[in-house]
Amino acid sequence: MSLAARSLTYYLKTSVQYIGYSIAISALIFVEFLFIHSGEVDAFGIAFRMAVSILALFIAMLNPMYALYSPNWYDGNVLSMGGRRKDIFWGSIVKEILFILMGLIIVSVIYSIYGTPEMIPIAVYLMFGSLPFTGLARIIGHKIRKNGRIAVIAIAIVAGLSAAAASMISNSRLYKFDFLPEGGVSMLLYILIALGIYAVLQIFIYRLCSKAMVR
Image 1 (cartoon, rainbow, N blue to C red):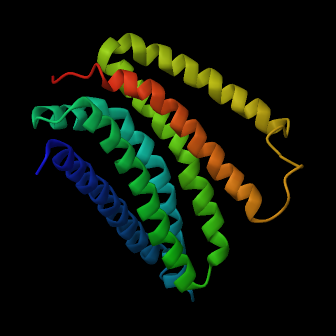
Image 2 (image 1 turned 180 degrees about the horizontal axis):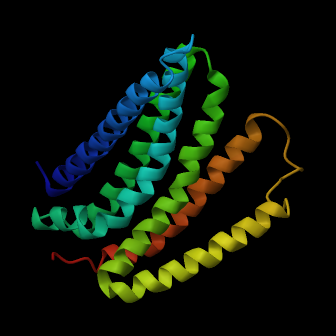
């Protein structure tokens, strides 16, 4: 097996492990909610819907979280196995996108079987919306690896200012795109914008990956 194939296999296995962890956590939450609502008529349905919704949320949240510490963990493992820096770059992209797609397929199938297909668009927005944050998290992870605590403090300040700006924009309703037609076009545009931002961030990530070293 070539170095590229071995590195890609490593990242594919990691992505499948992520899904397994997410499902396991959601299963525990399902049991917990089942006990909480045990006295109600539709206890199973309530617990199941909550668990699936939390699964979708977990997948959207865990992708950036894993990307944040990936430069300090998974990337070093790949380099120590003889992998190349470009293998890290492409492998990470495959891992992050595959994680989102697998999660979206699983959640969509469950929603369809259970008769709540109206929840699928919410899952789509959540998961694809997490991709730009995933790319940003990888950049932050590289900066933390290089600069340590100083980078953490600077990033915390920037994140706080960004959150404040996002809150102001949200409250002022500037985020509403009234010119978009109703239906699937707006969702498609949303997905394309998310993928576009994610792709642009990869330019910076590639430069950071080219300087990655084993630690």
